[in-house]
Length: 107
Image 1: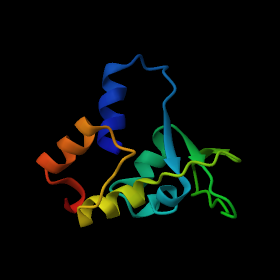
Image 2 (image 1 turned 180 degrees about the horizontal axis):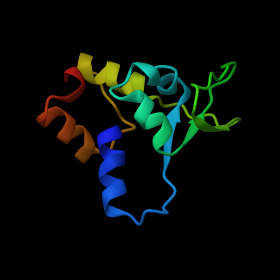
Image 3 (image 1 turned 30 degrees about the vertical axis):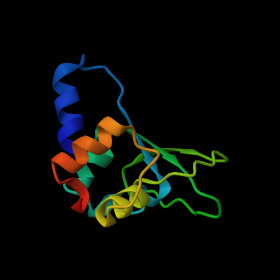
Image 4 (image 1 turned 30 degrees about the horizontal axis):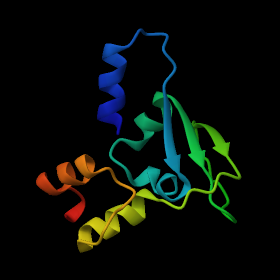
């Protein structure tokens, strides 16, 4: 993720505000990600909360929480199903094909 943000920074005007969108389940693990501190400080973070989920904000992060938006999909669930070879109807066919062709997420 930080590699993508840094590449965007090179291509966009310096005063461009960047936002990263996360589901609450992925955001809970952000501090375990590669160069997470850089990602946390690279822009503003938008987190879609889950019912009965308590958002924990890492130090130095600017976080905007979206509450009340119930999305039946999670990146964690998609990755788990891909690793098992299970269907992922929420993914466009081209995205699933790319993931499978490049052996991403244990597929």
